[in-house]
Image 1 (cartoon, rainbow, N blue to C red):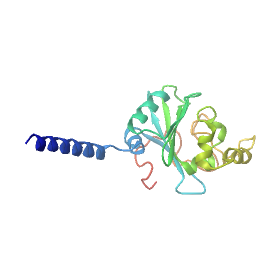
Image 2: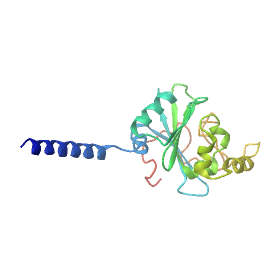
Image 3: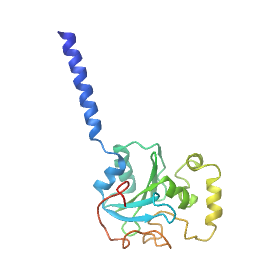
Length: 193
């Protein structure tokens, strides 16, 4: 009888563990449910490679990072440097930056690996990540190829996070909304936008 009760208790505990795991959402879903979507930067060359920008009001970059790490452990956690931090997950990167328009807020950028590989300036990640991390993700000589493509002058195809210009991103391609400050909720990664 004791053995049977013990087995039932173990089985019940295992069932609770499985069911509670089913209720957990991944970090992308969590962000899209908790924060307002500010903008979508669309890749000019691939409809699958976009960057979704959310705003965390009255939260610093380290506070947002800690919260998101608690939701889902990233594969890599970048150092907090110059008011920015990066969290690397399986198929996307989450780039956290201080909102240039309001120091009390942070911007949360959820970008596909392809978007970061094809459009980010390598120098943006300097100090946050060990060099081999991005090389392992994007291939040998990625940083050199991007530096050559982006050049010393700002190439409109090169990107340095949504808030780097102080007013969103307004290159020759990109913004899917009417611009910074046009806050709207909905969708997010994987929602067909």
